[in-house]
Amino acid sequence: MSRVGVVARNTFREAVRDRVLYNLVFFALLMMAAAILVGQISIGIEDLVIVSLGLSAISVIGLLIAIFIGVGLVYKEMDKRTLYALLAKPVRRWEFLLGKFGGLVLTLTVNTAAMAAGLFLVLLYVKHSLERTDIAVLIAIYFILLKLALIVALAMLFSCFTTPLLSILFTSGLYIAGLFIQEMRNFHSRTPNPALEGLLRGLSYLLPNFQNFDVMASATHGRTIPASLILENSIYTAVYCAIVLLTAAAVFSRRNLK
Amino acid sequence: MSPRISIRKLLLIALTIGFAVIWQVQQRIDQDRARLHQEQDELLLRSGKLLKMASLEYAPLMADLYWTRVVQYYGDKRAHNDPNFELLWPLLDITTTLDPQLLVAYRFGSTFLSERPIVGAGRPDLGVELVERGIQANPEYWRFYEDLGFIYYIHMKDYAKASAAFLEGSKNPQAYDWMKVLAARVAEKGESSETATFLWSELYQSTKNPAIKQNALTHLQLLRAEADCEQLDVLAAEYEKRTGKRPGTVRELINAGLLGGAPVDPLGTVYVFGKDGKAGINPASPLVELKNRYVKPF
Image (cartoon, rainbow over all chains, first blue to last red; front, side, top):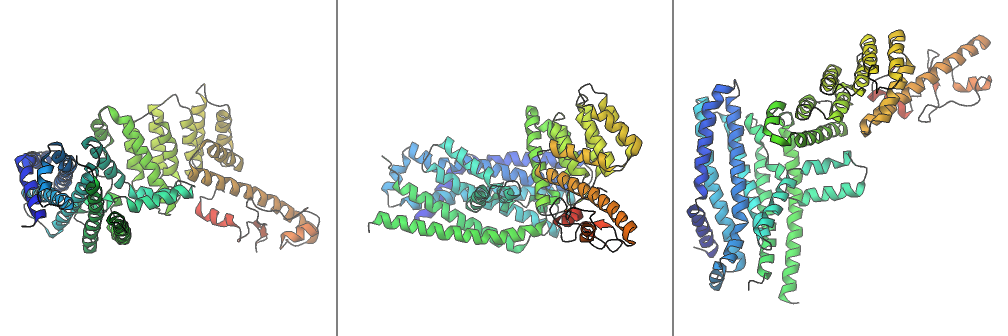
């Protein structure tokens, strides 16, 4: 197994040992409660509420894991000095980073897949059957996973040069900014300042655009999501993650670990 | 070249290429996302009361955020000339439920709702409802009666209700004296260009929103053009009395000594006479385009 794979596998095992996947119990309880309660308190929108609640829960739980564990991936190893033992072996710094990233993304994938299975089970319970339009829900979950991968990459980048608290703030800040990209582009309708407009427009392409992954409304209403969007979002995430990880590797390789 | 410099250069090249790819992919994603038309569903939670409960003690802050969203929503619609203002009322409903004292939301919100489509939602009935809600929550604020009268007068042409609103507002000790005058004038004359000019001027001076300001300005310019054309028609009648025929151009009035120079509309284009012999705005004037976009005030 390659060195990156070994680091990734151990990161995954560590996450399991740290009881990260216990959140699935919370998710299961939430969805069961929703399935029972929603039928009692709403008329005609039971499945809509289940889908939007389920997708929101998957997103929020995933975000918490991606940010809070992501910022500790590198910092914890340095703090506990386990990194020195690891880097004394023939493992390059960028391999360590890539392995850590892969490990957490694997953890998130397993976690998200389990939650997705739970969501579809509850949906089946409420609707008594699954329809073709439910594929949109699956696509929305895939987009959430792409978003989480991007968050992990950003969290790791910040954790390479600053403290966990600041990394959390920076990552959360970028995430929130990335949800307002369209507003940045439409700023021209609200300001007569061309310099500010140009700056915001440029920023809107530099910052990670988390609006790309928001198809929750379409998924909730079973609307078709263009297949090309799946491919484009996948490429976007892959390229953006590569950029961030490359920068992280450059920063980490120059970091004095003494 | 040292290895460190070469790594830096490589990193710079990689980042440049990476962001170039991101830019390209983003353009395609934007095109695809435009096809999703998610906007009509972007307000999944429409209950202001539920949001107020969920906001805990931060409801006023949430109201401010929602008001910002209203302004952005309205601004985007105006920027794209989109006549679909479907979410305007739910957004305003949530905003004013979260913070019933947010006066600006009632005042501008009612204007956004009442104006004719493209400029607004074309729902003066909802505009009235919003202002009435504002009056209920803030009975001491007399300006709401002015807004209510404005909607009844300009958008609904209901002069009796407009007069009643101005009169009710004038009972507030803080209200300006002209509220009483306005109530009497509307009750007496109904529609008149003086009243309309006064109301639009008030709106123009009181608003900070550029879209509303431009709208009010255009109405004022059109009202002035109407007054100018009425004057020209009087001169044309005098010309007809003298020569036995209606003037074909403004030049004929000048040559006859009835005018000192060519009269221009508020945007600087000379008025013309139509085939019916009546004075009007020159079709080449930018005012014509504005006239087509905004509600005709006369």
